[in-house]
Image (cartoon, rainbow, N blue to C red; front, side, top):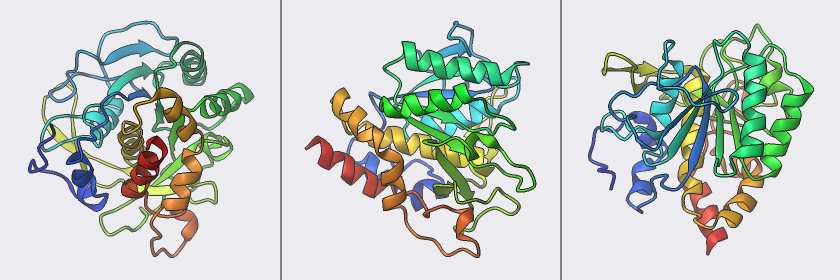
Amino acid sequence: MIQTQWNISWHHAVLQIPAIWTQHITGSGTTVALLDTGLAAPSGLDRSDFEYLDGHGNAIGPGDQDGHGTCCASLIANYRGGVLGIAPYAKIVSFRVLGTGDSVGDIQAAFDYILRRRPDIDVVSCSFVMSRVVDSIQSAVRDLVNSGRVVVAAAGDNNQYSSPFPELTPNVLTVAAVDATNRPLDGARIGTWIDCAAPGDKLPVMLPGSGGTGLFGESSAAAAVVSGVTALVLSSITDQALRRRFSVGFEGLVKKTATALPSDDPDAIGRGLINPTALLAAAMATSG
């Protein structure tokens, strides 16, 4: 069982995650597909049940030369005290799709593979933006969500550039970052297509290679936090059919239950801060 007296971070506290852990809800039984730069296996992420795949679903070894994917995974499912993930007992299936030379093709292949071959995957975590998005990616996202999988994406961190994924990709749960004072980060993307906000500033993570820890942030971190929250909430629904039905409406439920935040520009934070406690109450009511 997770020890809540471990050195938790500010984002755990503001989202009231330790109170959920004390209910023996830790992400166990859920699976998160991480579409990113890969995944190393430092302490806390050295799990025998994790899978390491390329974009087409072929097995590869653990590894992450960039480090971005490992940082995101750490926020989702790290079990090491001090850098605990939101859902420490969730399983991660890593798809290396970024930095491959054909990221658009690999992302599309990964979406298709998950849809056709991996009914066990509950959450698809996408801490990236794309400068172009093809119709087949938009269709794959729609089909994934309609099949009861939650697709989470980062809103982006530079408001000078548009990003058709996720901006022009319906059904994606799009997440902006806020700091410890619940303020949106300077210069980040702004738009009515943002659904919610989550902590995304100076979050402690495990780093690949060195075995040390560091700080990670921006909307990539916020999307990873929301992916962890989603896995945590869904783990309270053990019946797979019920879980899938609940997940179809998850984006709308996130917006309905989000905590309103003061902001000079509401379009920067969507409906407000994600509310894991309210989402969990809705999930537990669904499962009886």
